[in-house]
Amino acid sequence: MARVDVAVLGAGIIGTSVALHLVKRGLSVTLIDRKPPGEETSFGNAGIIEGNTIFPPSFPTDPISLLRIALKRAPEASYHASFLFTAMPWLLAFRRSARPQWLVENARLIRPLFAAAVPEHEKLMEESDGTRYLRKTGWLKVYRREKTFDGLARERDMAKEFGMRLDVLDTAQARALEPSLNPVFTRGVFWPQAASISSPIGLTRAYVSRLEALGGVLLHGDARTLHRNGEHWRIDTEEGSLDADQVVVTLGPWAPDLLEPLGIKLPLGVKRGYHRHFRAQGNASLSRPVLDADGGYCITPMEQGLRITTGAEIAPRDAPQTPVQFDRVMPNARSLFPLDERADDKTWMGSRPCFPDSRPVIDRAPGQKGLWLAFGHAHWGLTLGPATGRLLGEMMTGVTPFCDPAPYRATRFN
Ligand SMILES: Cc1cc2nc3c(=O)[nH]c(=O)nc-3n(C[C@H](O)[C@H](O)[C@H](O)COP(=O)(O)OP(=O)(O)OC[C@H]3O[C@@H](n4cnc5c(N)ncnc54)[C@H](O)[C@@H]3O)c2cc1C
Image 1 (tube, rainbow, N blue to C red):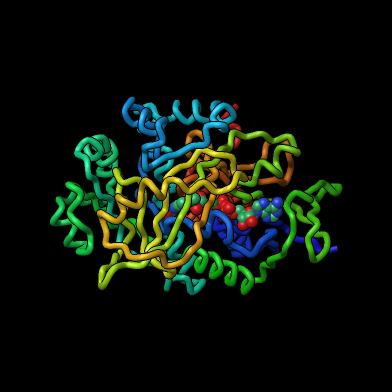
Image 2 (image 1 turned 90 degrees about the vertical axis):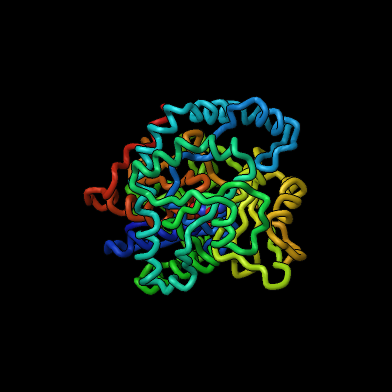
């Protein structure tokens, strides 16, 4: 019977980062997934390490935006009508988190964790040979409507209050940064301290290689086999049973599949999202991710091509793909950037694991000794992987945490 200090269940960017931080603190660690590492939600994101996040994407409050979403005309969001009744409690709680005062308070609470995002990635990248994926070229957001730009004034003010750099640009200045963009927008905001990566899967694999080089072990198995075995936890893997003193649940959108049978019910929802890759026409190129705020998508240069990622789709996690948002965003994308044909014929879909207040849970599991939780990173799992790994590693080994873990408590929903 194999025995370890910690079993980490789920090898996305969160689980991999947590496992790496624990092994670096001298614990014996096994990382378990039913698939190869990084092949689910962490595979297909927009690659942005958004250390500059202030306000989470929030429930639309103005009636015109709501009407466009309801009529399925909005490029930034979509939904399955048959799922709305089921999702309603989560949607109402999400809506409560859109109050202006809440957004301001939340920004102050989450700042310390987000401020650690880029430096903590850089530390792991340096030791993992992952720096080759890193671009420190910032993030450009463009706005077609003055109203959208004006609506984010409070966010920009808070960014300045936090000492973060941002440059408000006109069309010509934004095009000086990204000459291939067409002048279909009136405003740009450049966030130079954001970073991005050219391959999310490449980076997760690099972190797993580092984990293994430090003595961590990767096993295949189904996390739902987790059960108590006396004082320990036991998981049945393809390589045999494993006993662990402590277990960390990093299953992203699948965390409830394990936790609810253990009596732990947390209000996790999903916002599904899609990507497709495209080639550029001629010599057109991009040096950084670009968010077309009114166009409802993000475009990021990746190893596979130019990745167009869509916004939120409120739909059951396991329902078949319905990538209708591409019909709405592609005319916008083609007007902003000279896209050529598809670079591959696949449409990827992932489910952002989201709590209604858009903060993850990073905490002990209530009522289950030796069980820890790190999931629900919503739009920022790539961003927050290593910072989460450090925070949880410090909490589990009795070191004073580098930031206050209170905003991430599992009991905050009670
Ligand atoms: C379209 C889109 C764009 C995004 N863009 C960005 C971005 O630019 N920047 C950013 O920071 N974030 C972004 N995100 C969010 C980010 O991708 C997620 O927050 C993050 O990947 C979540 O990581 P995770 O490790 O928690 O989950 P996952 O990567 O899903 O990992 C969970 C793991 O658990 C495993 N698992 C599940 N069930 C079981 C089981 N029963 N047994 C064993 N293993 C199991 C899965 O195989 C998986 O490997 C985006 C998301 C989407 C969908």
